[in-house]
Amino acid sequence: MTFLSNLRRWPQASLQRRLLLFVVLPMLLLVGLAIRFGLALTSELVSNSMRTDLELIGRAIRVPISDALLQQDLVAINAHLESVFTIGRVYGASVYNTDGRLVAATGVTERDLSDSELASEVVRTGLQQDGYHSVSGQSLFSHFLPVIDRSGQIHGLLQISRKGSDFEQSLSRMSTLAWMSWVAMALVSLLIMWRGHQRAIGQPVHQLVDSMRKVAAGNSKHRASLEGPAELAEVAAGLNQMLDDMAEAQQQLLNQQEQQQRMQQQLKKQETMAAIGQVVSGVAHELGAPLSVIDGRAQRLLRLQQDEDSQRQLDAIRGQVQRLSRMVKQLQAFAHTPVASWQTISLPELLQQALTSISFELQPGDAEPRLLAPCPALVLTLDPDRFELALVNGLRNAVQAARSEVLIQVISDPHSLTILIEDDGPGLPTGQAAADVMQPFVSTKPQGQGTGLGLAIVQQILQEHQGSVQLSNKTQPNQEVTGCRLSLTLPFDTMKEPKS
Image (cartoon, rainbow, N blue to C red; front, top):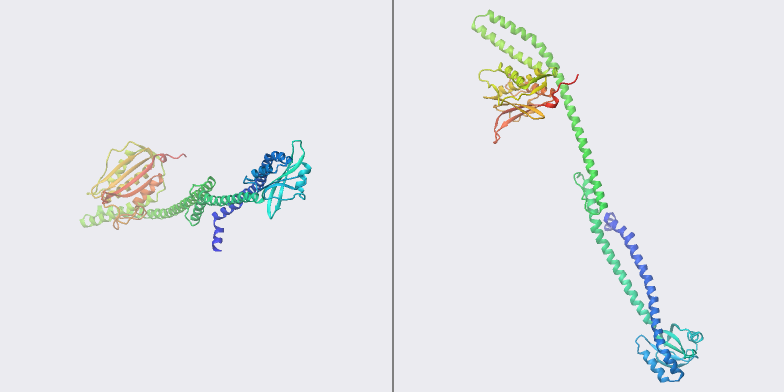
């Protein structure tokens, strides 16, 4: 029962059953009916052939027997009958008078035909007749011909007989051979159907079902084979197309979700930066005036106090005030309103202004930034003050990290402009990601030596100009860190003054 149940559930078995039921069996039935009608027709043809044989034999000896019968020459009659009997297919031969009395005979025969309707009919009509009858328990098939003299008068009757079993055996052999051929053809047809279905349909269907099961099990990357009949290949192609469409739709959904997450993170970051900017702007405003007052009072005291200790203390106070003032300026730059003024300026002039600005901050022993090669004579449209601030912050960060040199290199192509600022310092701290270093208020410098806003301001200004910032370590082939590289990239096609 389990095997039969599994067989019913197996798609190939179902197809084979339908093929057997609707194709093979009707074909075998038609062939069987053809054999049945063919056997009936053959039986009729064989019977006619056997009758024709007896008729031809009878016609061959009827004339000489007629002459011998008129002359009452029994020896000649018997000789003619013996010549017929020697033919293997003849079982008996007899000559009768018109009253049905036996004149001469050879083989199995009847002595008296006076009561035979067939014999009477032949004598009365002069037409040959045939039929089955029994003699001494033996079934015979006899053919009766009238013996006619040369004047056309009937003066006798010729009977030639064969065994009835000759017909039956011949037809039986033919029937047996035909039905055996039909059985053999049926078996061969079933074998061809089973094997042909297995090769032409079964295997492709099994592969297609196996592909569907794999997809149903969660293997969405699997694709069905396109081998096999065109119809199954079309189904497999449709399945693959559906899977491709589903994968594409799923990928689009994932992309939309990722984009939405990025937008939400960006919005959250913008909201946070806006809140920080408001706080920073307020703090910078509140600190600016007191620091100016403190610095002014310290200058007045320096002019009044002549002793060295007082002047040293007042210089220290002014140094701390200047440090706080620089921090306030950084806070104000961070909270500055994005790109206020687009102007056209040459790149060499912009770089020179940044180098001049950073030169006022250099201390004895600091590495002085220098260009590796002459700057390309490019003209840019941007906010000069904001972009100069980005360059100054990037240079300041490199100078503070460098051991002996800070190099500037300009790289341009038809699509973008990149300014590289490299130093030979220790590079990024181990385990510190570049993206984290550029976050506001994150600093790698010792406590009290950095505000954590320099690179954040650089990133903010580049984003305002539709550019990008990358911070990475410089390494040797042996992975030894030889410094840090800051890349400022601007797209040419976005640095245009917006239409009012």
